[in-house]
Amino acid sequence: MQSIRILFLSGCLLACSTQEREGQETGGAAGLGDAYMARRVTGVWLLSTDYHYQERCNYLPEEFVRNLFHLGDEVELTRYTELNSCELRWGPNKIGFYLESEKPFESVYQSEYYFNKLFDPKANQIADQQARAEPALSGPAPEGTNAETPASTTSSSQQDSTRGADPNSPIEGITKQTPPLVAPVQSPSAGEAVDRVGDKAIWEPGKKSLHVLYNNHVFSVVAQMPGSQAVLKQGSIGLARLVIESVNGNRDPRG
Image: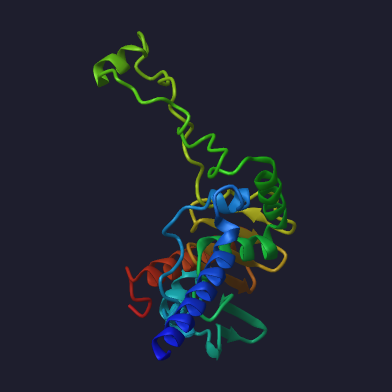
């Protein structure tokens, strides 16, 4: 009787765990997941979120900031730090660094969505529209995965010969190149796109602020001080690149 009772309880636990697992996996099952989820690239979710940023003011080395923004030695800087920010102030002026979260976002998708929501909202609308319009790349409609192309029985030299006289012409059956993981800036409401800074960057001249998306990180650099927009923008770009190198571990911002 005791063995029968144990067997019965084991069966119940197994059934319950199976139902829970099936319920959790239904959203990503073949043919049942949304198209946006199906196109997500594996390996972009952090295995651990225990990574911690450095002390915020480490990203604002005083001598580096002085040289970058052409501040003379006579300017006396006062440091103010909070949980996710650091500012160097003098009089009514300040240069600051601001993280949007205490630790990196769990995936590039989360950080990009958050960045777009704050600084480039049209990009999220376009991404949602494209996800609804395009078929999923899994389940019963695998168009785009090259699954519909029959296996080739010809040699590589025979396949190359199909290009004819032009070696750069496409080979039949090869799908298009995978789009970049992060979409380019669309049309920010209050700023302008900045190239070659992180994955996305937007300069907001009204607030003298540079907003940056880099992998799982979203941060801003501000330079609220006298000076031309060109000088302040270039200084903010230089500081943002220092932050990116520091987050990567390629450079210690303290020198």
